[in-house]
Length: 319
Image (cartoon, rainbow, N blue to C red; front, top):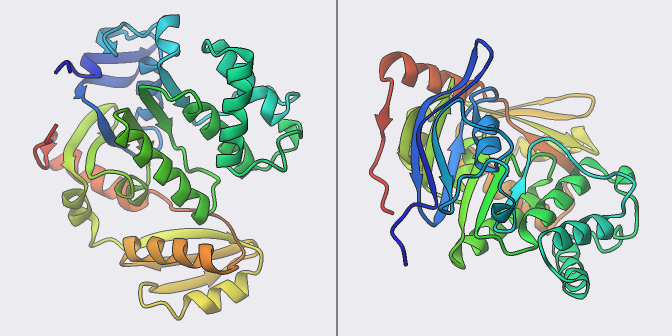
């Protein structure tokens, strides 16, 4: 097996006119899962768009699986992409869309049909397989994006905020898919602005802030830097008051506020909270329709890292 990195980025800068989205970024990634962590606007999506060949670097060099990615069709067959933005044909059914993309990646019609059936079932959309995508909910649309990223067994997965819009149970299932993909030898770059989402799939993280790598290393060390900040979470719920009463009984919940559409809470133990929420969502009916966390505590962390220590190697990567 070659020791060459799956992704090699050297002195990468990407500008949009006078705005610098990425500034002298250098990374080397080998097989496994790496979390790309950063607040909204940090440059994560720009980096992923360069790695997929959608954008060209302004300065610097990039190779993905040994190839230059920009406008390279040979690379598309080997990578799986879950973009943050939606780019689907709404007039197609879920089955038609997944099968269409598989055929574009070189699968024969019978192979594409079989593979589509398998993955439509894995993402829980069997009953909606014949419905047009325009009628899908946000969570269903996200699961179709996940389906198209994983279905062709790519060597490299580039996932941009892949858990957005998913309920706790499906978040856990997608995290398990990522782990399975890595176990078969693939490389996964998992982008998120929420630390616990990254911690659930890997301990190896890079922190991107204002277009630069602010820190890299072990997620436990990153977690230690922000444990002093209460973690704020917003939950969309069918019965907000019933959920709030239930959550107030949890030791890991510090405060709860009921809103018209759900619940706002703070927790000093986010890892324990998310673990329990996943378990109880699977075992019972909490009526949770979605969950998100503002990145204010992360923003505070990144500001501290950038202002006090421009580049921090939190822990050596064992690759």
